[in-house]
Image 1 (cartoon, one colour):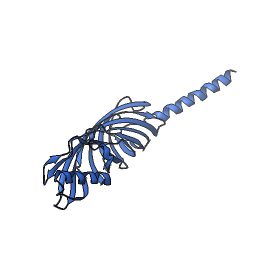
Image 2 (cartoon, one colour; image 1 turned 90 degrees about the vertical axis):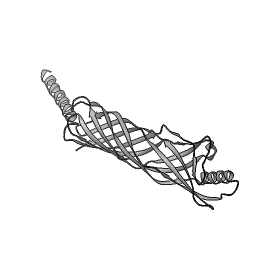
Image 3 (cartoon, helix red, strand yellow; image 1 turned 60 degrees about the horizontal axis):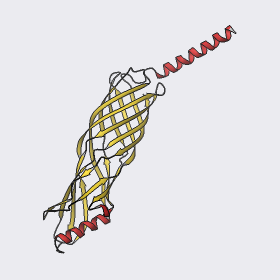
Image 4 (tube, helix red, strand yellow; image 1 turned 135 degrees about the horizontal axis):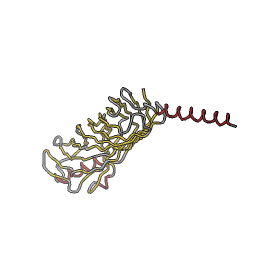
Length: 248
């Protein structure tokens, strides 16, 4: 009986040692963590009324736009400079933003859509020791945001054409409208927690806030030449990111 207890004790000790070694040095100086996962983007949006700037000056009172929440596949590469300090490059498949009309444009429905590119560089501080299984972290950095594949719905273009016709008493006849969204740098703050599954594998959950604005410049082709209009969009998205990473 004594020998059986001794054997059981040795097995238990080996199991504990294996678990301890699996979680040891999961994130320490010199390590590189490559992660992939799901990102949910929830804009905290607002906008200014659409304003015509040329060849006349007028605005659409009460007009506005909102941006639907969206999801995408995210990737990140984190390099530990010390056991606690790290840099992280966050990328992802560009999500598609869909803009909906609000206020006097609510009846239009979807105004348009655009893809957003936003590579992000963060500096992060990880709390606790490098061998801790749970490691909270905070981060701060910046992202450069640009937009491609911008398109406006036919319904919205018809609304713009009708508005120009009313403002000019029928003198302006519009055909089509295109849009450009301004690129910009934006600050990012980030908090999260990392869980070491094994020595090399980990899971992470983080929440980021991006202070982001863009200007939408519209050009409408008409019989009297191009008509220019503009609006400012505040996006300020909250991004939640759930990922699984591997240590190299």
